[in-house]
Length: 95
Image 1 (cartoon, rainbow, N blue to C red):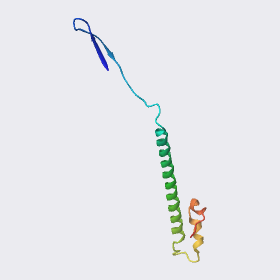
Image 2 (image 1 turned 30 degrees about the horizontal axis):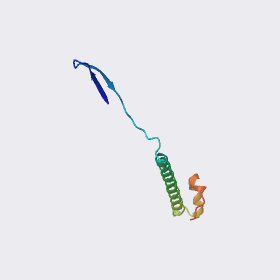
Image 3 (image 1 turned 90 degrees about the vertical axis):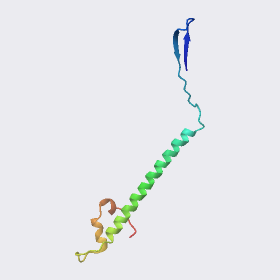
Image 4 (image 1 turned 180 degrees about the horizontal axis):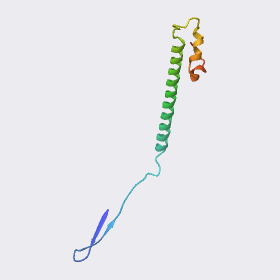
């Protein structure tokens, strides 16, 4: 919005400049619902990632425990647990 005023001779006497903005005061909870939905999606992604990590750890542990003992006579399959990383050794796995 700009207004130009002129005197009797047609000369421009000055300017008036304005700015208009609008902001909704109430959005019926749309913004909050969007934020809550985004938080729920993040939590779901984190839970999915944790589940995948646990599946991978389980598969690695099972594969390690099922490896043949070539070149090490007299070792039993369960003796292999000592070679597992600590994070996997503490878990009770159904092998």
